[in-house]
Amino acid sequence: MPWPDVAYLLDADPVAAYARKPEYPVEFMKKCRRAYFDLAAILRTMTIIPALALPEAKLAVLKAAERELAAQGRTADLVSGRLSAA
Image 1 (tube, one colour):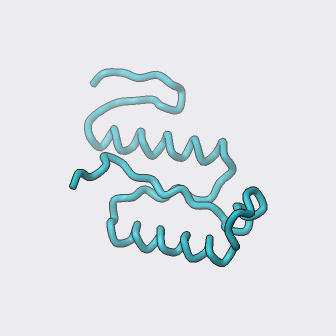
Image 2 (cartoon, helix red, strand yellow):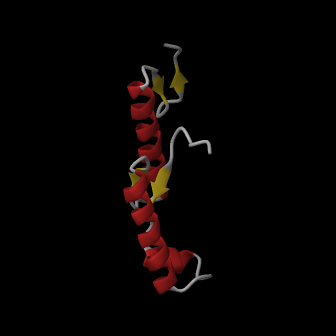
Image 3 (cartoon, helix red, strand yellow):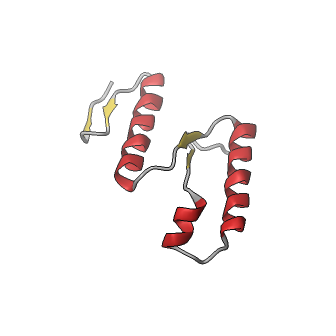
């Protein structure tokens, strides 16, 4: 089975998520959130992005991707949008 190169867990506050999209009860969303965190703990390959406002969450994902690329010896300034071959 192939593994993804990167995996992110974008956290969300269940109560805030329910306020935006009330399709599922808050208790169900809390259980799902716990299950994703349990999965992340088991796999130990997921980058967890904390519950943030959308602009901050986007920036956190880009910075996490930059760190992963740097760990692979590749350079990218994803935050500014500039890429360079290394």
